[in-house]
Picture 1 (spheres, rainbow, N blue to C red):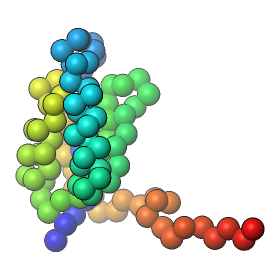
Picture 2 (cartoon, rainbow, N blue to C red; picture 1 turned 180 degrees about the vertical axis):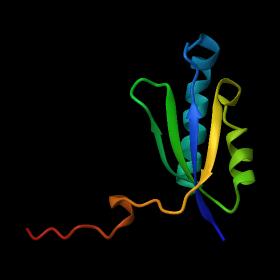
Picture 3 (cartoon, rainbow, N blue to C red; picture 1 turned 120 degrees about the vertical axis):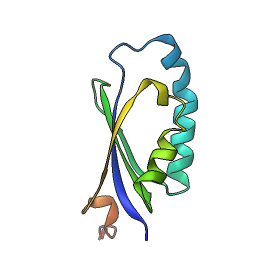
Amino acid sequence: MKKQFMVEIFLPEAMEMDFMRMIPAHRAYINELITNGTILSYSISFDRSKGWIIFYSEKAEEVLDIVQQFPIHRFITIEINELFIHDGEAYRFPKMNFN
């Protein structure tokens, strides 16, 4: 049975050139994971110090395996938590629009 996990990522304080070069490949990989339904949402704080990713997976070990494939993996630290509830407007029926 698939579950939802939140991965909190902690980004480096100094955005060095080696890290910056990895961002396009990282974003392409994230987009692929969103398209195939592995990632439900991806957010980065305004100050770019941390991010939050909601994964849809059977176990935390699978999530860790995926995160370790991030092109920026060597620059970040992470924390993985299984979620009990993750809700929002995106998971509801569309609102009716009576023209």
